[in-house]
Length: 314
Length: 181
Image 1 (cartoon, one colour):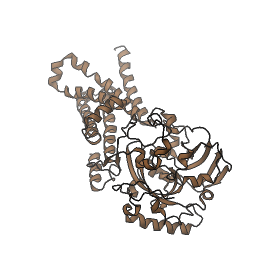
Image 2: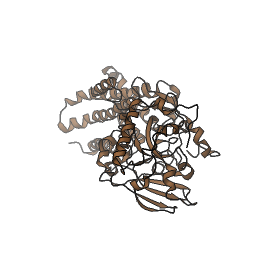
Image 3: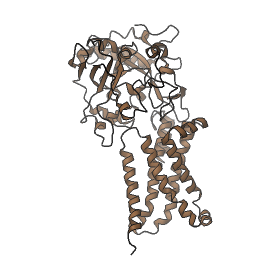
Image 4: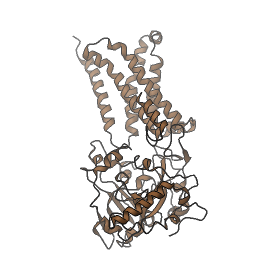
């Protein structure tokens, strides 16, 4: 699965040394953990550098401290500092996932059993939030297709829907009185999007297990879409014939669509999407840069949408 | 003062004082305090009546101008840090983003009030001064609308401020209908 093109730089040229040191640590940990949550992650590391798609030469990896302390995870509160403060209240072990809908193998599965035998690879992706800020994140992830294929989706499966855990006792944002979100958080993809090699389930970050505030134990990562598509702490996977109703679309249909592909030419009612602030920025230097169609992954994914009016299907 | 400390931390190490997106953090911080100070200024008269402290009337202008300082800093931070003096973008925001329109309208009301807050203007405008300064009702309402419209979810803050505003309005309405003793 070689996606990177020869003219594009390898991640080794942009990954800071510390990340590599951490990666070794990750390998060590997962080896000792054995059948733990990130089992199977060790084998893929060597080959991972080839799997980087579309990184620009001026993309520098965002510091770990920023990635793990500036999060939109409304299950823990609407302030971006809330998740890092309160996500430790969530217990992710044991973690069970319900698989349902148009597939041959459905039912309740233990998370460990789903990822057993699958290989986590390092994927350094740009991450673009609909709020016009962005980061560059070194994920550890498993190709989504490899995960979904295990359940043998049938020909009727045209979409796949994901749900975040609903557990107000450990996710205080779900108890907020004046919240208008109808929990649990729902997102979805078309099957051809889900099967695209760039789509992964992220199980790790910076060479370590995924922190709770980033969506432990696993979260979706589709780098050509706005961040709100990448549903966190997933407990339900449903294959369906009909387009799922995603949470933000239900809340504000004229603001958020189903596709949510990064698109600088379609402004959001709240934010111009023409440019973005690459974090961390500073007061003196906003680190503003133009936003690229499909977040810079157009070569890889634009064909999925050929013939579609992206102004209409935003 | 607190903001000054946060800015200091920020300069020491990026992302420490105002978060990973300090420009957003700064605009947001000033906005929160602008609306709180505005409501405080709007509370001075009812508190004066409640405590029968006529001396409080003197600090109404002071509190009001403090509130305006926060508002002005909030608008300045938005213009300098967000818009970066790109007037085309400002126009786009003003026309297409209704929460910006509401915020700008509130700012305009308050600007008129602050500009005419001196004794000289009070004398020059005579009874029109009182009428002009009734704009505060509109300004606070618009500020709350601005907040509601920009909120994506969890309207707790909006509700607290709206309730506070409603109580203050209620007090004034009650004073009007209550037969004079």
